[in-house]
Length: 364
Image (tube, rainbow, N blue to C red; front, side, top):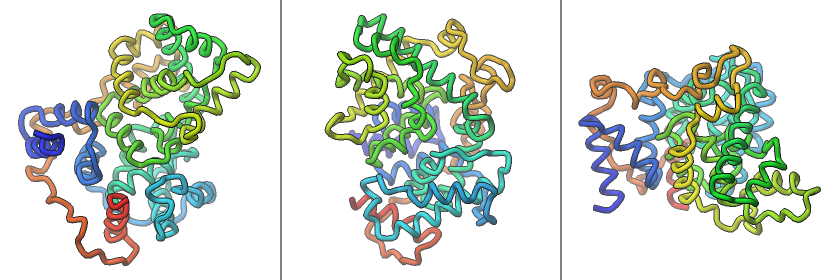
């Protein structure tokens, strides 16, 4: 049975046995292949089944900043930057973001969440993308939106640095250890964390593969992915000039799309190493031993304070619910195969636009 047939079988059997556990294992190991499968599976993992009708709202209080970011968005994604209706796509993205932040006035927009919403709209379409972006804001990215950003992001790159120090020691990787001893603040990982790499990569297939992995993992897994990226790609750095080392480190990892420096992102190798790091280096153990405290607001250790970084977040994600709850919440039939050659009415709005976007991505 090839991968596509295997995934179709898993989709068909979601309501039975431990269907969601199998889907999550498959997503971490293989990914979901293409937009057809991702549209179905991501919608489940991101709560699109919830009743949350999309209604365009008035401009939110952060509209001006949102508009600046949206107007320069999507230019870097290979499959979209030449899309002739990119301005219309940006208007849809702007409407979605205005709606989310109007309905959640306690959220403070940070630069990069528009990249998150962009990927969800490209994969799921405008209406489902809105629901998914709202759900992601309420769960995966809530700490960044609802708290002072510095209180949540600083401990995260501290965790990544300590993880890499331990790994370099255990593997006798002297170059990596020298790097981490020199670089106390690896701030280049910030956009990776805040956008799940959607701001830093230019190929939507690479972005979606990482998202397949993260949507099927624990909330703190993104930190291990960041560490794995550094392990896999740090070898190109020249350590002879220590005066320029920090700047070169930051420049390299802030520009993952620089093919002259990193010709092959080695995504699957990064994800395989991520699983090994998760298995070998316990999250709570590092936080406890290194006194890494993530929520100064509540002055409690990360593993019990943050909704984003709870190890056991069953109340947040539908695929962790009991089997009985899953059987009630998941349709027994999956959507029919999307016929990518069907006639598309180009009314540049709503569902028609979402199908047009998906057709364009698949075609390219």
